[in-house]
Structures are given as C-alpha cells and as structure tokens.
Image 1 (cartoon, chains in turn purple, brown):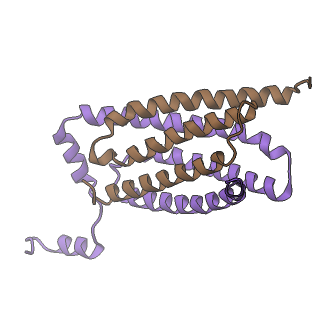
Image 2: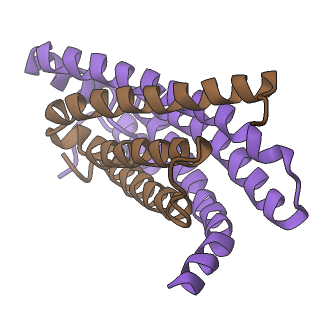
Image 3: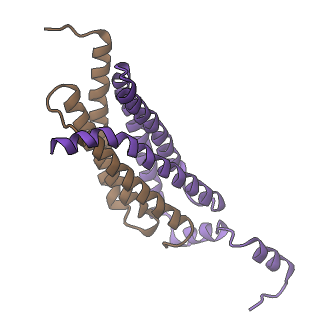
Length: 137
Length: 102
C-alpha cells in the first residue's frame, strides 16, 4: 500500500498536467461553439478557464519542486489556491444570478432570443436561402 | 519551540482563508445544484461536484499545512477527480452549445 501511495505522489502531478491539457483543449472548443451562439452565457466559463490556468501554474511548480528540490515553491501554493477559489465563487455567483434571470424570464422571450442567436448551420445553406425567395423542400 | 516568521503567518492566514472560502464555495455550489436541473444547465451539475471535491482538497491541504494530519497521496488524487468532472462538464456544455442536449 505504501508503494502505491509513493507512486501516486510521484506520478499524480504529471498526469494531472496531462489532464489539464485536455481541459484547456475542451475550453477552447467551448469558446468556439459559444462564439457562434451569442445567447450562451460564457463569463463564468471564462473565469473557470482563468482558474484552470492558475492551477496549471501551481501544478507545474509542484512538479518542479519534486524534480529540482526547490523548497520555496510549496509555500506559494496557498496564495494560488486563494485566487482560484475566489474565481470559483465569483463564477458560481454569476451563474446563480443568470439562472435566476432565466427562470423568471417568460418562455416566449427565451425562445425568441434562442431563435435570433441560433448557430450558423452551414455557409452553403445560408447562401442558398439568401438567393432563393421560395423555400426549397 | 520555533518562532514563526512573518511569511509563515501570512501563508498560514492564506491557507485558512482558502479553506474558509472553499467551504463557502461548496455551500453556494449546493444551492446552485437545485437550480441547475434544466438541460441547459446540466453541465453545472458535474462542475458543482468538482467544486465540492475542491473543498475537500482544500480541507486536506489545510490539515497538512498545520500538521494536524498528513493525507499523503490523497491531495494528488483528488485533483485528478476534480479535473475529470471538469472535463465532463465541458463536454456537456459543448453539447448544449451545439444544440445536441436541449
């Protein structure tokens, strides 16, 4: 059991960094899809992304501490965590306010906004619909 | 008994602040959980679980900093679980954005 624990202590920061690369990739995909649909509320996700970047810096310092035996990096992690948790709380509060607004908004208004900001399906389809006056079945 | 430097005081206060704020964040996350049962906010369910795990991580880190208990490998395993839930929430939100989960 001790051997597994020691292995995890050595390997965990490294595979955490690998998973963070996946997280950053998915965040980029998220912001790309949100660009096409302006109705999507992305500010909390941007704050989460900032928190993830700070976590990357913290994990990188943890890995360097293990590899290079730098004593000072451990004492910096606490400050990173305060910044991360502050960003989390702000994102949560923003999302809670937005969720309250959505639940109090009439359904017809939500449908109108979604209709106006529907994602672009296909450039070819758009050009086709713009050039034709009657719909093609 | 070793005397604490100013930096030790500041770092200790920062650690206690992080633990307290993480507990508050966990409480806010649980209150948001009730409002996130709609399809469009389904991604936040996974994110909320990740935030609760982050609270646990902060508490474990605080216990280790003040020498109460050394959680050992847990402080490295819990972030992996947090990242797993963040990835899940991101995938869910991307699917919502594309209109695949309405």
